Length: 265
Image (cartoon, rainbow, N blue to C red; front, side):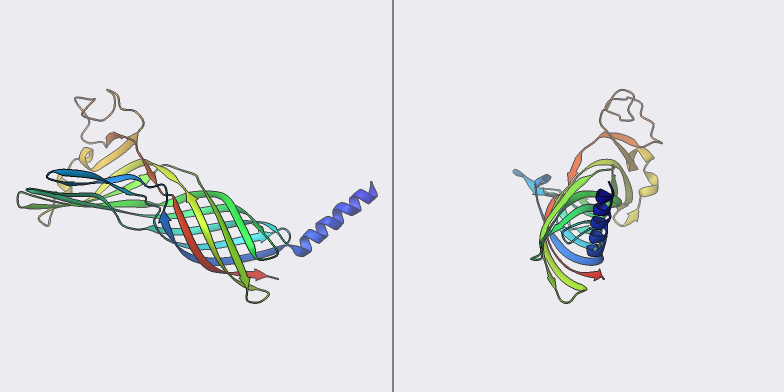
């Protein structure tokens, strides 16, 4: 019994001696993955899909990690993600044009497990959790000599994705290491609500003239006769948000990141 106790204590001491805390920062670029039919391009005699994903863009990241021994550790990363601007609608028809673009920003937490080899190669795998942010859609409509500008802000439901990466770390000295990695992010987010934040006609602000029903949207999984939707309810409450069916947006991406880590002795 005593021998077993001494063995456990010795293992804990050995693990503690090789344990190491580190912090770091990184910058990268994400190429959209799993692109879907994101929008529509239309002319008088043609129509086609626009494919894309809001996962394309720039992540700025900070991280803090702890290695229990020379190889195995845990890491908590925080990213501020800025998507590229994507075209949602590109309509050029006789007497009518529309252009709608979409851009998203998010704050994300990424708790992961980390395994590294003695040669500097490492891998990470874990969860990706958006904790803040919004998606902004900006539209311009031109018809009959009138130009209408609309801006909407969309928020999503709580979602959990996953993240994994494979990288290499190069030691400049005992404390400072540079790294480069290829990272995959898998994330889908269901819509929660939308709010119109701008509505102008030929430069004149008309937002106050629109009832709440026309400015606010709640996204739901089912529409019935009790929903606040004029298609299914003949007398919707115009002082409340309109109910619309939900949809899912994709944020998956393959990223290339570079960064620096500082290891505490």
